[in-house]
Image: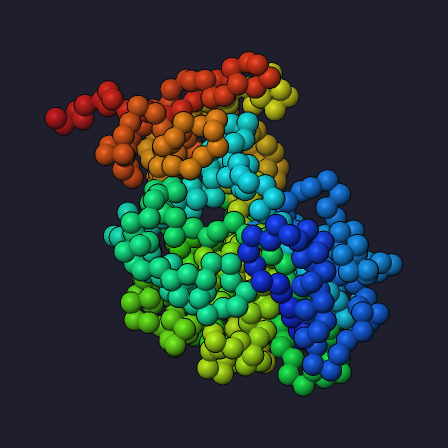
Length: 389
Length: 136
């Protein structure tokens, strides 16, 4: 592969990050959630940032309500007259919004930009499952998200001889972390036995193998790296970014996500780093199996051996390479467009030593991974970012 | 019949697929001009009649579904003999019988009702009359 002539490495800094407490937020509209996340991000800037300095904004949101465009962000924040673009890329939407904003800032088009990811999910009682009742033959009719990932779980268990308990250990770890994370939706512990005995949603995945249905919003303020010191003495730099797509109709095995592998390859190459140098990661655990497979796709474990990282304690909060210290999507919740941005908010705090009860010991490099399923459950998109102090 | 069903009528009713002459990838159900595996553009596709036989690559048994589905519902990723990969709803089977590698065959069924009309296509049942191995 040829080296990209215009890498993003070290050219964009995160200077502010904020989110709202995720949950069933019936009292807040989409715009109120966006507004609060934005205000929290503004308030987090160490040396202050005036709203008038924001030159462009990106909104990541998935649900296609008519008129749900960048205008929603402008109305929520008062940031009119500047370019606001809405991005949608399945569950990787928030990450792609950040990626697009970063490319514009790295290109020198804007000095300071805002990225907001938000999703109002609980207003629709049926959630995504109701959307699987598609009058579409051969596409995802009846293939709910628990089914899509359950199909990976069955294939993984069969191929590698891993039992449900090997997968369930992900849920136990992430729920334990979520109890300590103030923004998490489900702050409850669950034992291995509880995960295994919970009712099935889509065999082999039970209730605690699945993330909840959650409302939420998160925001980031970014600037050209040269300007970062104007806003903070401890910025976080974007070192690598990757995005790729794949489809199950192309063939390939069902026990890995090629979109993740390709996005990770791009991001590691751009950052000039490898998986062994990553100190902490937020990984897309919409379902327990997704995190396990992602350990392997991201290079943290060989194929089929992801569960060993849990057995050895490597990925625990006190371990050598903590994964999902925030409790991940399993406890934090997965408000689609907000998810990727919230992962980045968490890693920003980790790298600055501000993560409170879930703080990891002096991380230098952090990895964020977000996967999305689209085109009626046939296609997938993977997005990976690497951040550093 | 909606335009979408009309466009895909030969796939839905007769399991017609399209095989890339460059890499052998089988496009189903759409006929297109580019190959999703080898990126040939334009690709040369040969029309083929897909076999109704395939095997289960993976499956789930769904307990939580919208009302219009019967549940529990078994859904599988199925690979037909020619290599086309698709989602299939499984019928005439049980949780005990299901396994990765199960041989199945396509069965023409009512899939759902649309604008008051039945829409037919294929579900998949375990293959009951597997030909005997000549070596037996």
